Image (cartoon, rainbow, N blue to C red; front, side, top):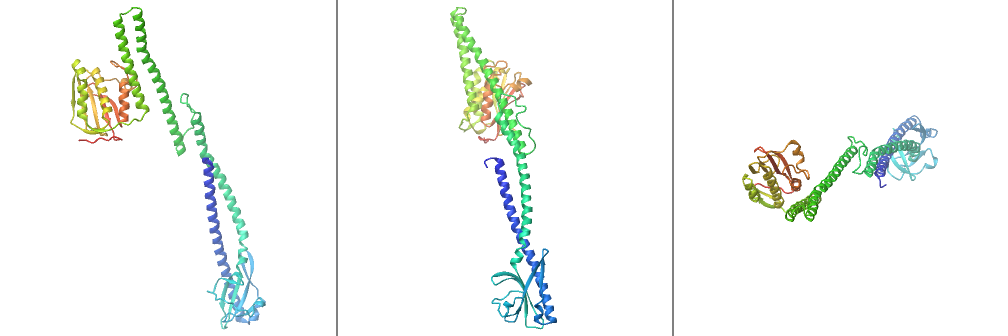
Length: 447
């Protein structure tokens, strides 16, 4: 019974057994009450019959009278006793009872008592105009004997019903479990690099159907991740191959004295630095995506951090005659400062490379739907619709790009900080990159 089907059938069977047991017990109790009350009523009628006989004659007139009652179409005999005021038997249908005394008090005019060690149903009536009482009784065992046929019929009906319910339950459980088995087989066959058009059964609006739909969606995400990984490896191979080929080519160029040693070494140094920078960023991006690294949070002032990042990029901005400024009031927040500072520096580096004459860092303490936001605006050419979708992808460099990994790293850091890195059109006319902090593990508080 380790399968879902077995457990469901076992639970179903136990519930049926308990239900049937309770039903039979209540049924027996109800039938018993009905039969007992019916016999009591008929015995009372027989007592009235006996009283009428005695009223028109003497006690000996009862000797040849048969007291019968009918239960469920079966005619049964009742016995009688004539009692004096001291409960002494002065007449009975069984002559052996005459002269004996009932040694216990009878409660009520009718009910259940014990006579000679047997339970009986009785009715007792006083005889009008005589100091005697008539006691008519019937053994309870004769009534219980009627249960046999009733119980056989009842148990046959219950057994047949139980069998039908079990068959219906088995069919229902099989119908419920079938899509689960299909899902198990589909998951067992699943390979992310193969087409999965018909791998999973079709889901419906039931709970199991929704589970199937969830698995289908999960498989689609896994396949997309697989495709991204393959594309990523292809891009890495291509990007790493370029500087390696340059280094390799200039080594032979120096050996063949095609270029001067100074020129060749300068190219080799430049490409080596580019190669190491690319490898470092790849390792950083891989670590960000694969490891749930703990970043300690501390209280910082966003404006102060933005000014420090701007100061770091000021020489490069001055070299291109770019105005770099920070706007917005001081805002105290709790965040992983080192990682946020890395994002700001990377975004400012991109802005310096692509802007025309102005960069503005804005601290936004009331961004709709978020705790706070930082915007980096420039007055450059901005991005086209195609570039807006691709700019955060790995190795997308665009014009003036370097490794094509900076924005991908920034977006992953933003995600790990319970934030979001988005692109929009800047009020200055160029590009706006916004770090939006949502409510999450590291919640900020305004100063």
